[in-house]
Length: 264
Picture 1 (cartoon, rainbow, N blue to C red):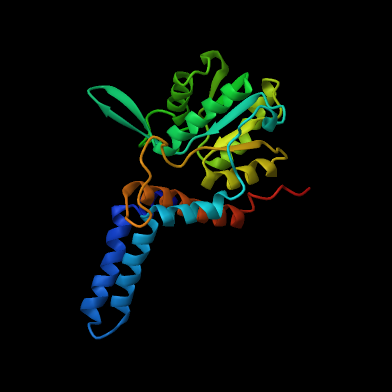
Picture 2: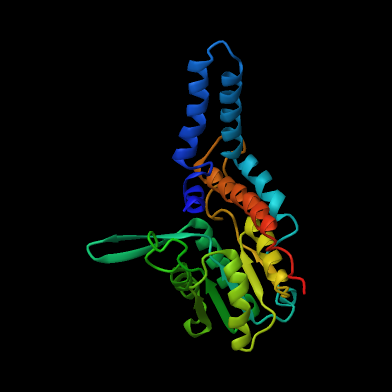
């Protein structure tokens, strides 16, 4: 429960976090009006938020996690892979009048589009859309269902798309997907996820003795005009949010020993 609360509320773009940070500074001004630390704290908070809410700050945070990863551009780069695995990046659902509608995050949509592009590029015989319901109380549909629909709409034949809908974490995906592929006669595969998520995902699969071919999705929709490098915007704040989450996830997974192959 505590971990769920932290994931949902304790991240930079959350109103809870913004109010918490500002409340600490304001409380300091009232409790210690002659002290310099409240003013310095508030100045640092404003500067920090300004930085991560700009495209420059977001790009620097993404670069720290995504350096060395790119998108596939030829069949040869796939190293003989005939399967594509697309990892989800978050979703939600809305209900009303007895109807339920799934809503993917921008990152999940971009990953699904990249998965479809790669599948058509290499002529993949199988595409796995992976993502379950990490919060069943909030998510009424598995993420895989919505991603599969986008992949099919983007031109991949429906009979080549399968869903993995039982995973709740990236670690679950790394443990479940290899078995799914082996059952269907597939070995090597292309792994599609975002640049900030790719390093941790590869480490988890490699800990299982598997070395997929990476192909990263875009972090922003390519049809939108480029944002100003110094003026904050909501999209950049969300990108920074994704990156900062994965920096913390790296630390958490490393502390648990999940990024290392098990020893006999």
